[in-house]
Length: 460
Image (cartoon, rainbow, N blue to C red; front, side, top):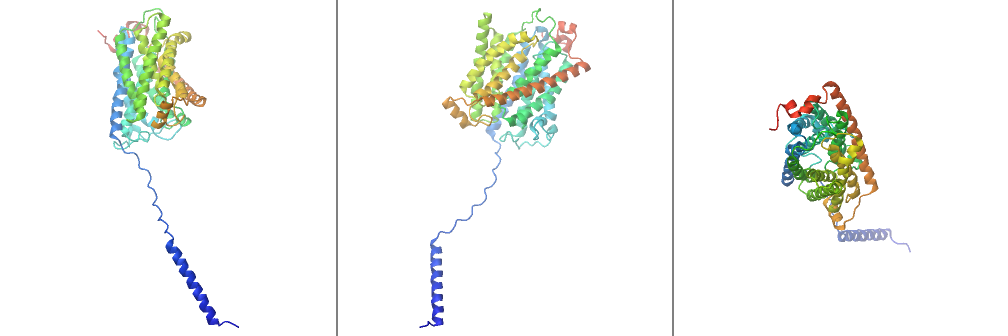
């Protein structure tokens, strides 16, 4: 029997109603999807930090103290009495000259722009610098403070070179050379390593200036010693230091100031700054002892000049490593640097036949190379990248050394690039200055002394 059409429609409608009711009931029991989370805001730039700013203000004063009066006294005490004022004057004059040049153009070339080899002129005469804004490399301190901190490094580097040509370069030639060198050598190398250039990009580790400051200054000093030639009477006349008490005071000021140099390179009051300070002290002490004992064993007596030179050699060698090594690494770096720099300032100098008056190359060049290489050997944490406090703490607790051959090769790349650029440009500058105004005082002036002939003054 056929069913009635209306009855079929009624059944279909009832089925649809049941299905809809079931669907509504199921949806009612299903939890609603959470609303979409709002997009995360971009991370805010770190705010300027008063603690970091206070430490960096202190570091600026400490590093400036390394040149005046530290280096002026250290070098001034090591020359003969007739050249004390002229030698101290070089450090003071370089401080004044490089300050102005760094403000005008040096800082901009070193720390602005994205070029692999040189910066830009965006901070020419410090234009656009604001007191409440930070540089990307120092996000928690005002940029004028970062600029001034880096200025103190730019000041001491050429001042170190003067130790190689002490007692024989004309003052006018010295000013021309130091000014041009700071722009054409120091600023580019600082950019290569610290300012976003190719050496930093390649992974060269230089925490506070092993390549930028010490190898740079040491190599320039070696070239100066060769180009100017030996002092009159070198090897025959008595050229003993005039006053080693002055040199000891100068070395002591250098040692204290070096805490600003190395711990200040953390660019803040941080655990890394604390560790950099600790390893600086350890390396300096170890190198002072190792130089002293090496000299004692070979020459029969430990000298004042030896122990203070050794301490400075240790400070030089730990500089590139100070943010990357633990205490054991610092101890070894110091012990090695003292002995190797003693050899560099004595045996190597005789072998190569140059007159590096105050051992700028023997201490800073050789010490910088030793330190740069050993940084690759003893670095703790992630080699070739920034090392934070947790990495350093793990290394300290485990005593493990993560340095490797690859990093040493990278360090050698930085050393070779710095030596080539510095050596070539330094030689060219010296030759141009010699042809134009002359490099060296005449024989009569050199014999009588630079104090009276260049500055019209004497110590007593």
